[in-house]
Image 1 (cartoon, rainbow, N blue to C red):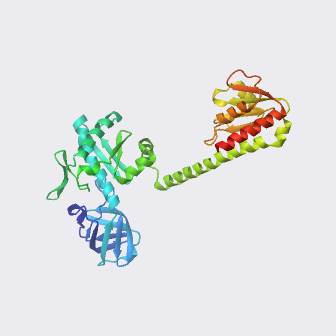
Image 2: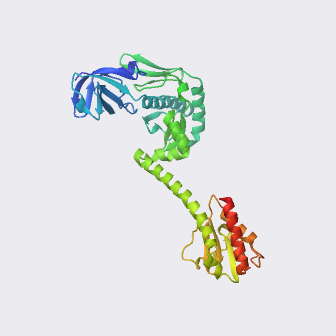
Image 3: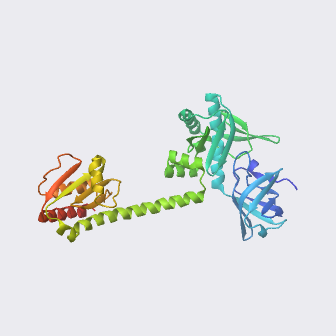
Length: 375
């Protein structure tokens, strides 16, 4: 089979092209010419579309075997040998991968100049970039390497493709010239968005471009580094993110419920009627005495253990967890301040009050009023 003319070498910034179908085999199309960059040189393949009239097929993967470029499409039955087609590459994806590839050339040169360490492998995909060196990359190098990288990016140096017969090289001003058949940006100013994430088993992780900037804003550098290291599939990440959003919504609803539940508990007339002359204890959990806490827990089968303030009334316990709307410490403070006479509890971990029924009703009304004012 005839080799494919590779337009991406001579015209790396074209986005559309016309070609003729040479062969259709299963879900693979071979064209006489193509702009679609195949998997190679550790750079991920292009995506895009091929159309014939109104018929459209998506190009999912692209590979090169002995000079023949194969386009894996989702609707191969639309095409036959001899058909004239139009191709369009996913330019955003191409530009992102080009950004990572050019960034790797600059990073590799900086690391060699500073530490005399050679690059042994690199990878660029929609999930970001990675570079391996002849020794493990040290996190102690990140600040110096990133500093030098930004100086080069600010200079807007030209990035050129050089041809010597069948050999292709990428020249970045007088910084670096390396053999490379991948796609690249036009100047180093296109690399200003690139940042170094850190290391994974001695390999340097980095990202940039529009996708990298979005991920940085969304996850933060450390979170994204962990996310990238474990290489979770996008569908899993989407499910996790949706779950987190759902939990946040549930948490907001729960906070509102807790405030309402506490107010309703204090309004419970049967509870108020049971109060004659009893001891009321208010305990703050991050300062509480363990023995006192255990004793109070015995009064109720279930208690929450996060940000807890316990208000015990005789052998009934109202449990209130802190919320954003009304802090538990405020409620406890209001309970004390609304009380008529504190008769014990010298330490700040526990405040005891002897209350009569009428006094307790007044206290309850005062606390409810404070809660409603705050929500």
